[in-house]
Amino acid sequence: MAEDALGNMLAQMDNAEPYADIDADVFERLKHPERTLKVTLPIERDDGSVDVYEGYRCQFDSARGPFKGGVRYHPSVTQDEVTALAGWMTWKTALVDLPYGGAKGGVVVDPNDMSDREVESLTRRYTEGIRRMIGPDMDVPAPDINTGGQEMAWMMDTYSMYGGYVIPDVVTGKPIEVGGTAGRVEATGRGVAVTTRRAFDFFDRRLEDATIAVQGFGNVGSVTGRLLSSMGANIVAVSDVSGALHDPDGLDVMAIEQYISENGVMAGYEDTDNGYDDADQITNGDLLRLDVDALIPAAIENVITPDVAEDIRADAVIEAANGPTTFDADMILRERDIPVVPDILANAGGVIVSYLEWVQNSQQYSWDLEQVNDDLETRLARAFDETLDAYTARDAPDLRTAAYIVALERVGSAHEMRGLFP
Ligand SMILES: NC(=O)C1=CN([C@@H]2O[C@H](COP(=O)(O)OP(=O)(O)OC[C@H]3O[C@@H](n4cnc5c(N)ncnc54)[C@H](OP(=O)(O)O)[C@@H]3O)[C@@H](O)[C@H]2O)C=CC1
Ligand SMILES: O=C(O)CCC(=O)C(=O)O
Image 1 (cartoon, rainbow, N blue to C red):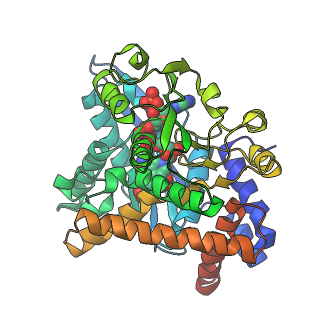
Image 2 (image 1 turned 180 degrees about the vertical axis):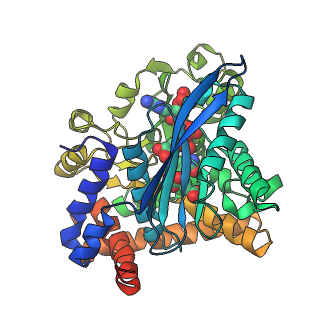
């Protein structure tokens, strides 16, 4: 049984190893992160009291280039979770062939309980805590759950203060005003939408009018829903932590985005009269079990457990979140012939455009949105095709195994060429 994120990530590696051409010693090395730093973050609250938070930065592997990966603020962050996420970043950057390794950071906190000043203070403390291990050529953080452009601007500012000059390429996902790129805010959702379209082609099904349920309506879920809707798909259910909305005739995704931006949560939208929707409130558990053409988990890990996998009625799962399917659930979906497009492929659009931001920063040059989006689509299409090639040529049992074959072989051969020992 592997129901924790790290256990799942390691089980996915073990499952793919027999299909991959990788040296056994190198494979063993790849199961252990290079290093993890734990930091203590005392923060003065607005009422004058002091709270102490814990944060982590795990650098999983750097054989192919500087470490890369987001920073998450969430009460359920643990060292093992951050390690699993850093491992997935390693396989993701390798699969889409970026010159990066993999890392991830996190702070055990619910930022929704904090004022903007308190979140700024936490972000600056965290940046100070990890600053000796990050840098444009060492490790480049980016947004993840509950972090975005504002947090990246604070991280860049704090790091630059210690450097004594502006160092924009220490983080990606920055606002445009401080060196961000066109297209990064939408990049992960755009990548999920583009991958979903290609997956439907592969399944020989029409995306137009396909019914889709999206769990999680933050950065990734909302953009995914909006873009799939603009491609003609019918988004019949969406959710946030407060619950889910369902309308078999299709939801007005833009109106829901607007409602959340005004009210903070989705709850209550079903009572508004926008003259179009007839949405019912259901639970997140109900959403995962809807009879739809595709289910897109875009929230947190481990939501598709074996129990859920037995009940899933979707024809396919496209993983926008990192690690939404437990290893045991994955085996049930495989048995039930329900294809899963894995996270390391489906949500790679974010890190691809982060890479483009980093390149633009280092060249002190900026690209327009069309160039960024074209590059994103080209790289994702290549990774999708390479995954399909591995799926057929290596007789892989599912798409995740195929994606891991490509990623493990790339990281493995980088290790072999560099040598295991100093
Ligand atoms: N941001 C990025 O560029 C990338 C993100 N990802 C992954 O995508 C996923 C979502 O990230 P992102 O959109 O950035 O994060 P956000 O913080 O923007 O949004 C998270 C969403 O998930 C919802 N949510 C949280 N917990 C639950 C739960 N238990 N049940 C249902 N919904 C829940 C949140 O609801 P509420 O707002 O009510 O809390 C919110 O709608 C994560 O797995 C992340 O690692 C992957 C690649 C890149
Ligand atoms: O944009 C990045 O560098 C990383 C985003 C991320 O954390 C992820 O892909 O899970």
